[in-house]
Image (tube, rainbow, N blue to C red; front, side, top):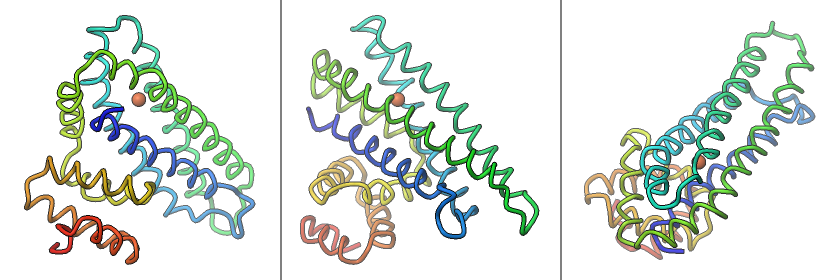
Length: 225
Ligand SMILES: [Fe+2]
């Protein structure tokens, strides 16, 4: 797998990591039940990440693939539509729970939320798995590394800077030390020094201190942020 395609694997891994976490957090058997406002914030952030990622795929990746490998991406676009409506469903149930009267225990709604979150995790994980098993190898087969790099750059270009700031540390949390280093080296190679410094500062603020120390050992350039 070429370097540009690793970026796909990293964002996919981070999405799956957060889906797993939200599945656990919505489990009504946890003590006192889930904390709803934190849950709503994480769900809406994940939704935004997934939406931007899917938009990048539909505007860049899928048309490129369609031009060289016909009849492959249609079912993936349909998956994206289904994901959107699944997010709607989960968000509506969560809003219902949040507006339930104080002290009431809407157990049915809490169970429903958990079931819907399990469903969302399963469908999105399957979609991501298929992309990695089918689409990424096809890209590797039909596009040069330079072409893949250009596509990866265009897809990242879909992410507005104000989203990039929280998204980078959010992704790093899901990755191994080697993957973190690889991703940050790629980002460093594509983002101008000043914005990179701002991104680095956000990573430093959001990551546990020991993780940041490990990163600066591997990437001494980070020490100055
Ligand atoms: Fe996708």
